[in-house]
Length: 174
Image (cartoon, rainbow, N blue to C red; front, side):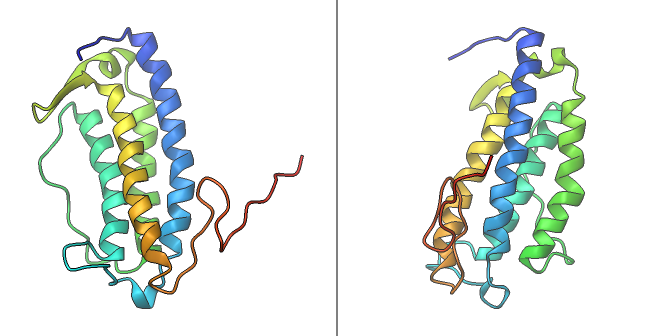
């Protein structure tokens, strides 16, 4: 499906998309922080990523997508885990140091650039702003995987879109 957006439409979608990314990261942060450090190498089966690898993949993928939007092209390789990222808290700190500024820079992209079509390795050719939805969908997908690791690792599952057995839903106070 090919479609185009007017720059003003792309700017509105970017505002919504970036706010959504920030909100979802709050939840993702809770899931990553729930990884027991002494079990962060857990994987449910040999083909699966370890918990720390999955946490890193979530964080670095957000940077990768945002950088691709900012550069106007996606690179094939995703960076590996840096030597100083060893724990779930390190992943969270790296995200805040690296991705939060990319979000701010993405907020500054000209509306015309957000509306310009950007190829995703020949599979998709959407207006650049549409890839913000990929950021969110990708993170939610892998966050779901990671949340299923927590109990077998001896961790507690935080509230994600409502309560969990470990963090029951509480009605917000007015």
